[in-house]
Length: 492
Image (cartoon, rainbow, N blue to C red):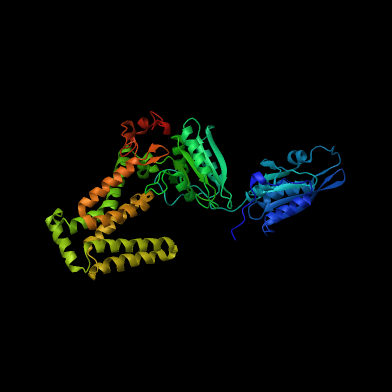
């Protein structure tokens, strides 16, 4: 039997004036869950007791804030001059001391507030409840992201709570034009998703398209930002994604200033941004904190590493199998001697050792950190040195695969497509040789140039070529040039 989804807002039940009936409805909605707490209280007005109830979800509220701002003021409040004005007004203005509060009159809204860390106060004889924000659930603190470490710059990274991530951006971007829109996605999970953009810089057409695509999401459970990538991408099955991701608040702010749109999903530190271009995979925050010539050298190394990680194994196999004359004389002797001493062909060696490396990588990711060193030792000694000495695999093959692996780590955002392309080019090189690799490269180039991200060419500003846009592709101009004109998405 599929899990029961919460009631739809448009078909929701209104709260009644009978507080006992409301509490029973809420308990029934949550199936008498043990983390739903109901504290019955009373308010003394003109020597008469008025029945109240404070509802919370255990683990989602700060008990000290709850006691100091709500329960203690209600217990200690007494008035012999109550004139019969609105009880809700009295509660909001004179009793509870917390400023973050709102009213709700439906079962759906009340349940959403409870699961968001609010304390809901109901009064007997009133069909409206007051929801006060007393969130205090435990979460991982703001730390430097492991995947985007920098030598210079902030050490802060996004955390899991949505409001914390919004505050990290707002603190850096003190601009009233920065706007956030929140929506709920997932019939079962009811996950909060926030769209952020900068008025005046964002393209209204792209913003409207982002809203439309998010509204079309049919997921019943949303547990991570990666769930939305295929819905936001123009082609969800494409090898390269038109949706970028970052864990750094300063990077997200930079994208906002360029007119991009960020999507924050509650419960994950990975923030999405669109549109995303191919050249951005080779850019890091360090590029903008160092000298332009150093940034140029770093980016050049990344482009070279990308090319080597994709083409090197396939070209090596193609040359050794079909065109050995492409090797220099001394190198050809080494390769031929290595092939003669091993029981496998060059293609089998490279393909087998690449597969072994992927197994080691997967094991290193899933194993506890305490066992990670053992995997490194086994990989370095047994699979590396011992395999070569025993004649199971050739030393040139080991060097080619090792160099390819190292190069693929230089661009971590592209590791997945690089791994697939490397395997495809390896197979094509082993079957059709260099000419097959050239043909496949042309197909890949045409595919990249035809891809778009929200109507913007994925390979811009290289194709279509924009001379002014070249200031921040391979070569990075100094900040005087970069700040000369603020390029927005609609200008691309």
